[in-house]
Amino acid sequence: MFDSISTDRIARRSILQLGVAGLISASMAQFARAQTESRDPAKFQIGCMTLPYSQYPLERALAGIKSAGFRFVAWGTTHKETGDTKGVPVMPADAPPSKAKELGARCRDLGLEPLMMFSGIYPEAPKGIEVLTARILQAEAAGIPQVLTFGHTSGPNRQVWVERFKQLGPIARDHGVLIVVKQHGEIGAVTGEIVREVSDPNIQVNYDAGNVMDYTRGKVNPLDDIKTCAPAIRSFCIKDHRMFPVDQDCGPGLGEIDHYRLLHNVAFTGRPMPLCCENISAPKQRAANPEEIDALGRRAREFLETVIAGLQA
Image 1 (tube, rainbow, N blue to C red):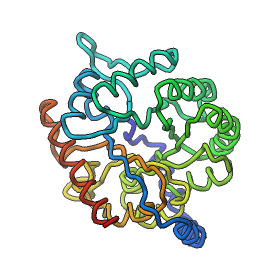
Image 2: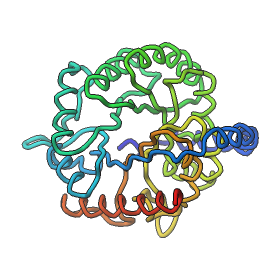
Image 3: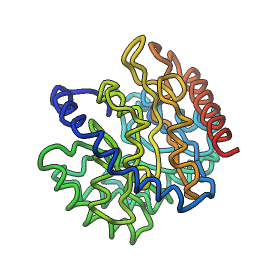
């Protein structure tokens, strides 16, 4: 639901593609310097979002993620609980921190460490500061290190983002939480620029290579784009993308993105690096039951484990 394409987003794609080559070139020197700062292996944390199980209850999602062999989980965004037709939020924005603490404990009782939670709001929204602050408090209570946000930086939104992140950075730091920003209808070069302008250690980049291919219709290569923001990346929303036989998001290793080359950009930063699987589906197919989602999750986890082992051997 977060990756649907509206008409106004399509119009923005052509604007985003203009000048991307220049942004990539200007960032190469900074990227090269950052890569020499550490040769310690990144601590990749392969997790699955509850999002692929959105048509099923949250408890079934957590059980499935555990059965697929994941050790880490990300919360987001809603689930069809018994008797419900619209979907119940994993964590309502107005829920007290104690509720998040309870859900964090439930995850750990299953052997799943929560890594990230969706904010559920764009930074430029009227209640952006209020909701993101509430999410920071929930994340702190649950022991979740990252709150994910995203949106559109076109027009005046970009300056609003900068101003609001400058306010939110100190709040996040006081509570031991990172706000990570992923491109949604944009490219990593744009979110990287915003994070550099904000210049706060608790406002960083979450990278989504599948979104880059999707929203630019394959005209921007994520393997080039990621170099514009790699020093600021602190996590990934993992999804792949294919332009053939259909233009479609899919699970990692089932699309056209080379994950060896993608993750090489952060493989030796020495940092914790959550890899949260957002899309694990097979192209042109839809899982008929939760057991099929479990199997797709297991395949995605094993693929990423293979990639990481190859990169850091």
